[in-house]
Amino acid sequence: MSTKTLESLELAIAQKALDDYSAAFTDGDVDAIEAAAFQRHLQQGIDAFHWIVRAEETLRQAAYQGLINFSPEIEQALEALYRGWLAFCERMRAILRQQLLAGGDFDNAREFGECRSGAIDWIERHEWRKISAASLARRSAAEPW
Image (cartoon, rainbow, N blue to C red):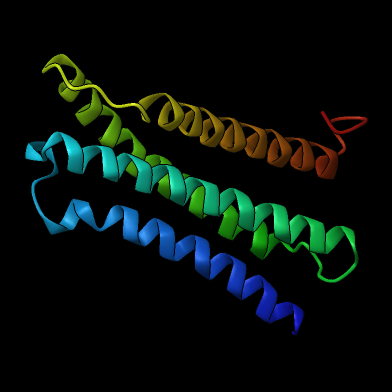
């Protein structure tokens, strides 16, 4: 398997999971969704997040083993996936609050929140790496932060 195929496959699987998760926002009125369907959709979001994480882990392991170059394009694709997931997550989070206020009980709500925190953490770390790299390039920092 070529390295380009590996990169494309990992990122394509994660993108497909994100696309499937986000499709509900165009397929109907998510605000009026019944509790069981909403719980399934939360799980779909959790699963999509885990596909993104797995894609990153696999690509980083492949880079570590010298099979691929972890290029800026891969980093940008991962950033787009995490940011895309988080954008849909914020809408789901607002609906989750409404559902909980209406008496809903979702056993996967905590895990969904943990995924949200993970996406935010990843984005924040990524931003710091970009700032650090830019500072080093301008020689305004002696070492990476």
